[in-house]
Image (tube, rainbow, N blue to C red):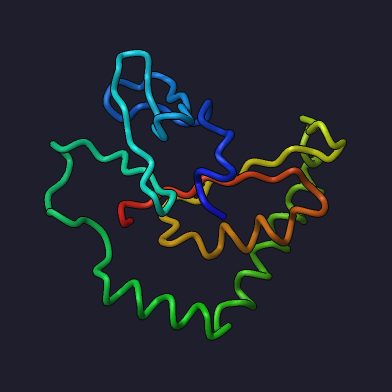
Length: 146
């Protein structure tokens, strides 16, 4: 799932420079705040919200070698049981605390998931797919790495 295909939650993000709400601008493929700060959406679907002053290295986050190794491990299915348990915990927590209150247009409860430090979004994507039948679920993954 890419950012550009499913991004409808811009109102949940704030500009890291001034705290104003970020607004999704489809034609420009950007997130913008009222002060004029803008963040481009990369063709791979991610947005880098680090300001130039906050980057301590030219390429923050995991190296390409680390990303490739993680991808191989995740694709092996080794972590599928952990991801399934995460979905179970989320679903049980929603039921225990009364579920979601907001209704989506298709009649299902709306669910927003934030995954901070998401890496490439493996667990977030797993949760979205697993909960999509019961909820109108959307996710935002935040990570310093592309």
